[in-house]
Image 1 (cartoon, rainbow, N blue to C red):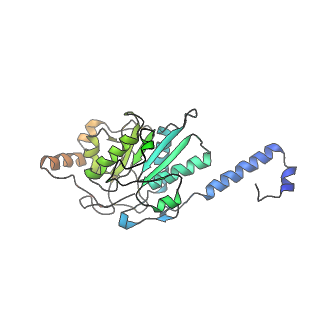
Image 2: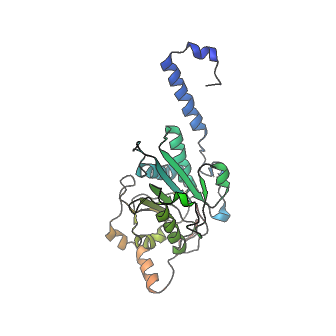
Image 3: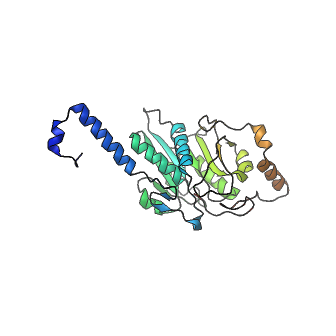
Amino acid sequence: MDRLNPELLKLLKPETLRALQQHLEEKQADEQVVVSDKYEAGVSEDFGLSQFWYNQHTSQHLALEALTLGGIADEESKKRVGFISTPSAFRAALNTVTKKNLTNVELYLFEFDRRFERAFPKHFVFFDFNKPLEIPQDLAGTFDFLIADPPYLRPDCHLPMLQTMRFLAKSKDTRLAFCTGATMTGVLYEQGFLPVHFEPQHSSGLANQFRLFTSYESDHSGGQWEAADVEKDSYYIEYLERKKDGQQPAEGVAGASDKDSKTSKQ
C-alpha cells in the first residue's frame, strides 16, 4: 500500500480499501511465482546432479496432494509437510501457501543442492540420502505428510529415504508418497506402497516412465492400483525375475532407456 498516494487512500471507502489491499497482496504473491519449468526460484537444472524439474501441471498436482493430505483443512492445529528432493513440488506448494495466506502449514525442503538454501533459507534442510538420519533431531516425529523423489533408481537409495520419512513421520499412519521411476514398482510394493492413477511428467520430457506411489488411498490422484494389477505389471514381474536370479532391480537414466543407470534426480 505504500506505493499509493496516502491522500487518495483517505478518500476510499473501507470496503474498497480492503479490496484494493487484497488485490495488491495477490499481485505481489503472483510476482513471486517462477513460471518457467526450467527454473525453480532461479535455480536451473543441473544435469550433473541429474536434476529434471516437473512440469507445472505435475508440480501443482503433487503440491495439492501434499497440502490436502497433510491436513491443511484443519485450521485448529499446525501442520507440517516435508518435500524430500522434490523442489518443483515444494515451490508449487509454497506458492499456494503464500497466495492463500495459510498460516497453519509449515513447509520443509530436504535437499542436497545448497543453491536451494539461498532460495528458501527458512524452509531448507540439508539432506544426504547416504546419511538418512543426519537431520535435525527436533524434526523427528513431527510431519503430517512426506513426499520424496529419490535421486537414484535403485533400492539402496529408496530404502534409506524411506527410513528418513518414517523417522520424520508423526506416526506409522502418516501418509507417505514417492514420485519415482516405474522400475521401482517392486521395491516400493514390498514396502507397502501402491501406484496411483496419475503419471508425473517432467518439463524436459524424460524417456523414463514415472509413477506416483502412496502408502494411502488417494482420491485426488485417481485412486490406487489394485494389488492384483501390480502383480501383473511388467515392471513388477521383471523385478521378481531379477530378484530370483540374485540381480539388482533394473535401473534407469533420466532421459534414457529404463535399462541404463541413473544419477541424482530432483
